[in-house]
Image 1 (cartoon, helix red, strand yellow):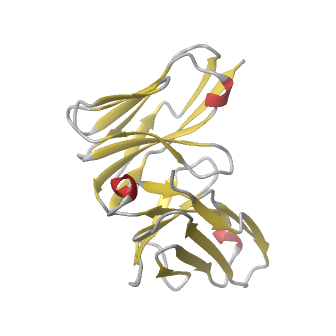
Image 2 (image 1 turned 120 degrees about the vertical axis):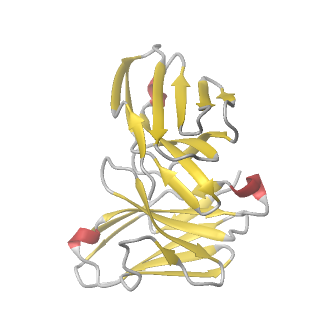
Length: 118
Length: 110
């Protein structure tokens, strides 16, 4: 089956620093990647949708200058949390989809990245 | 975004019991999906449903796509300890309109 990886799995940083999270599709080309945020014991909330080679589409209430998304290739998308603050601490999960290929457009989820901002 | 309400919010059951959970919305969806999430991991797809009335099984799991297209349910038969986790429904309207439910936390007591 399709595999999506995320790196790092955990990151702890100081307030004010920027953190980059990578999402990779390992055995398929992802025409679209999605970034979610999940608080403890809560559901996944979609932050943004990114199509390869174009700007990401952000959900209402998500600051695009705060959460920079780059989808430069068909296998890699990055989320950069800029000037991180403690309230940005959360579990970030990406998913990838190959609309024209494997599984007819099913989303495959990464294992998540736990961000803790001190 | 769309609101998908799952119930119950949490369940504590004895090993061997059957489990039933459902997901409802005020909106119509074209696809319903059920995921399981273990702690510290991403969701894993269990079952996907593509048309109203569809009933699909995956081992001990059975899910149905409601006739109104506004709801879905998931049953787990003869629960085992490894069924522990959070179960999420998800509804899809179009390729980029995908929404998760509020989740059902399942605890199986050996």
